[in-house]
Each structure stands twice: as C-alpha cells, then as structure tokens.
Image (cartoon, rainbow, N blue to C red; front, side, top):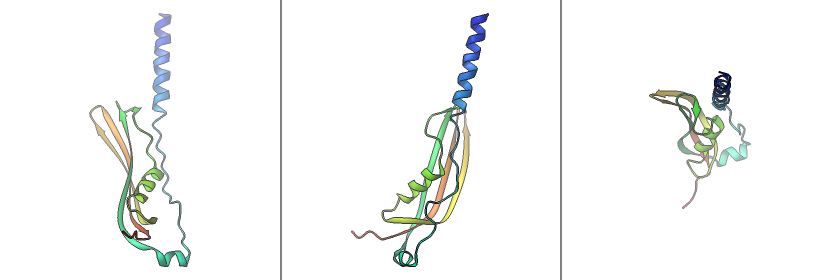
Length: 120
C-alpha cells in the first residue's frame, strides 16, 4: 500500500510540473514605435505580412513545441519581406483549437510592412 501511495504522489507531481510548461508568452507590443522624419521619408509600403507562433499540446496538457509568443510572431512577420524595418496597422489574434487528443494554441500577427525596397 505504501508503494502505491508513493507512485500516485510521483504521477501527480509530474502532472503538475508538465502542465506548468504550458505558459503562453503574450504581450502585445512592438519593438520600435518611433521613426525620425528622415527615416520616415525613406520607408515605403512593402505589403501585408503575417507571422504566427503556435504550440501543440498532446492530451490537452503535455506541450510539444515551444510556448506561444507574441514577439516570435512579430519577428516572423518582419522576416516575410526582405528590407522590412517596421510593421504598422498591426492586428494580434490569439486562437485555441481543440481536436480529439490534442489542442493547438496560436498567436497570429497581421500587419503592413514598411521598409526599404530591395533592388534586384
């Protein structure tokens, strides 16, 4: 009976440790919000971009990927078009999709990229 109690205690402890890994890194911010007038004159509209950061959770509790992060989604959106300096008109969306046996949480960033056009 003593071994059964210890095993239950270990299983419960592991459950709480693993479930603690499912912490999203939210934060609706941008790394650069001001441009000097000289910098603004050189920037052109490069087009719309989308960035996404997702985490899948097996059996709704065990995280498979890195935690979701607004900053990771913003950085991914900045890398979509070469020459991007800033993102404007940003929309940040958080979704949770629950399927049979797993769930997926995502942060999506939709924005307009501004920067220097790359000459080919």
